[in-house]
Image (cartoon, rainbow, N blue to C red; front, side, top):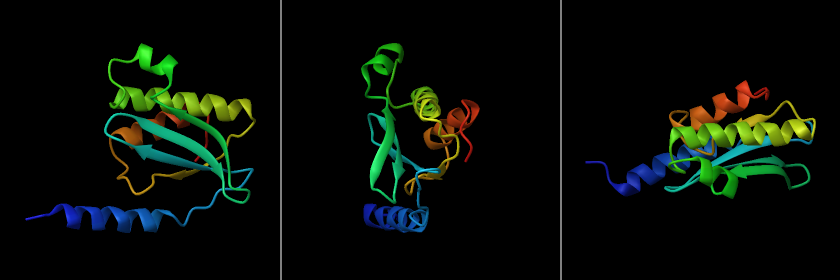
Length: 121
């Protein structure tokens, strides 16, 4: 039987393995966070410790246009939005940090939408 403790340990192990990616000003780290209700993404410059751009399904413009804020369609919209905001700042290359989440479902949909909108991973 798999307990919550074992699941949490596996998640933390994956998260530590993916923390090797570092972002710079020219190529920031695109960090994903999923909660049960929303999905968040931000572009971080690790050398300065600054957030360059952020987007989430919590934003009013996205919440009104979506049926649910925690499904694959919401993740696609958030991916398009972060790509648009980064392209406005002339940033096209990023390092994708899935933050320990399995590259499947919402995380994959967000990454694919950002790629289609013009970002290079």
